[in-house]
Length: 441
Image 1: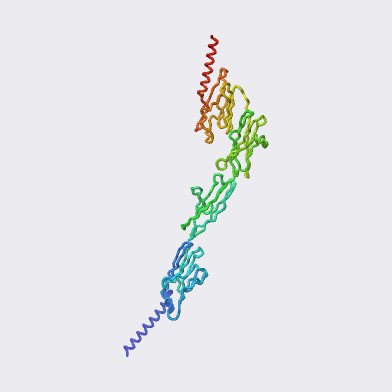
Image 2: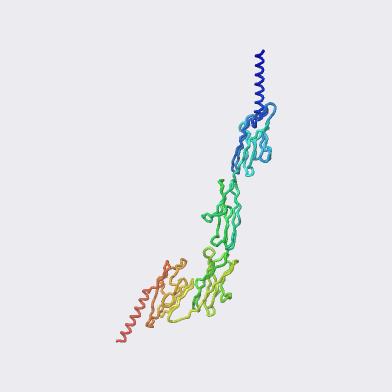
């Protein structure tokens, strides 16, 4: 009996100890179980990344779904606590969501055509006691999208700002370029300080975030400035009865208006006498050419080229002088576009006017502008084009000398005595010898 009592006391003690241990274990976090918590699922948090516009599956595996008489349900809930699915049924009206079950223990959430707003926390829950939850964080990557400023037109000296606001996931970086050269900027903003006309042009902003494709946009910048006017000649001489061309070169943005005036008055409306032609140059440069035909005494004077736009006005003036006619020496002159020569030809043909040769030919030699510029649009070689001039030598005897003017491609000039001229001199000398022979006889 005694042994039996001792055995009973030990068994009772062991039972008490086991009861205490089970109570302690049940009170520990994460170890609390019940008869209804038999379904087992992987509750490890998970991060899933997907590109916008593609499909994704959020995993949820439940090993056992029910025990005994109580049935357990699996539901998916988003970060806004909205129920998306219950069991295999879709609760939300968004047809992009559905439950995908390849195997019996699969309760995956399938999302098609993922949108940026789909990003966030999703929870797969089983209504056990306590509730078991699988948390999945969905990250949606979005390629860059740019919202840019409009093309700008700004006066020179202003401080304009261009912007390219870029959105996407992850947050895009922005770089600026002009042509093929990168420009240092403040990210989405490109600031100018005292902008100049040299900074005009097209600017490109490029946004990238390692999600293809990158985004780029172009912004055009126009810089306005007041006209700049210059003349090729500030003083020109010409004979009465001849024609003359006056050239005015203007740089401006915008071009505005350009006109010629005489003695601060508009030119007479005589199209047969006055004609203007506009030539486009590089970038914002133009040339306004004034043609005056059959010069009269009243045509000589001061001519002004005026250019104006919204930024201001500029003008320059040239003096058109009358060239006195002489019989001993021919005169030749030019504006930019015309050479007029009035040679004295006693016996060798007619006088010639060449409207393409660009030089100034004075009596006895060239003027201060000695080179003939190469003109790719007009004749470049004037060899064998003989201009017959009369020069007065130191003996004050008239000798007829033929000369050839040659314009070379590199802009140089040559004034040479031609073979025809030598023949003329020899002809004169032979005549003199014959004359003396006849006197001797």
